[in-house]
Image 1 (cartoon, rainbow, N blue to C red):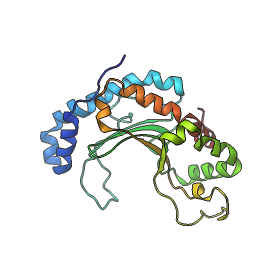
Image 2: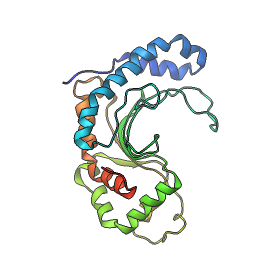
Image 3: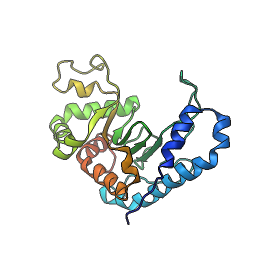
Length: 228
C-alpha cells in the first residue's frame, strides 16, 4: 500500500534543532520529535520489512527505540570536537542480522534539510572486516568489477566516505584496483530530491534502489562470510 510517511514540518523541526542544538530546547520540543520524526520513521520501518525480505531475508527492519533501525538522535560526543548533543538528520539503517551496529553491512536512508540519500554498504568497518573486504577485492577482482560496474548500480550510486592516501599495509601499491583497496568506507549513496519523502511512492523508491545494489551488497556479504 502506498502512503505518505513524513510531514513537511519534519524539515522545520530539523532546521529548528540545528539552530537550537541544546538539551533544554530539545526537552521542550520532544513531543514534536516524537510526532514528526520518530513515529513516521517507525511506520516506514514497519512497512518496509516485508519488501526487504524479497531482496534478502538477512537484513533487519526493527521499529524499536533501542537497538532498532532508527539511529539515535543523541550524538556520541565523547571524542568529538563538535559537542552539540543532537543529530540534525533522520538516519535509518537496515543492518545485516549478524551485525551489531551501524558498522555492519546495511541499507540506509538519510534525511536532512540539506541532503537526502539512499545508501548501501558498510561505514567504517573494523580492521578485521576491512581486511576481509580488501582481500576479497584482490582475490575476486573480476566479481568486484562486475558488481561496481553493474549498469543499474553505476548509473545511480556513487562511492562516499574516506580513503587512505597511500596503499594499505600489505597490499601492492601498483595493484590495478588500488583506489578501491585504499577505501576506509565501502558506502555508496544515491542522492534524491528531499521532497520525495512526501510522496506516496517513497517506500517503493527506497526498495527499488536497494534492489539495484544487489550485486554490490552480495559481494560485501560474501567477503565477510555472511548470508545474503
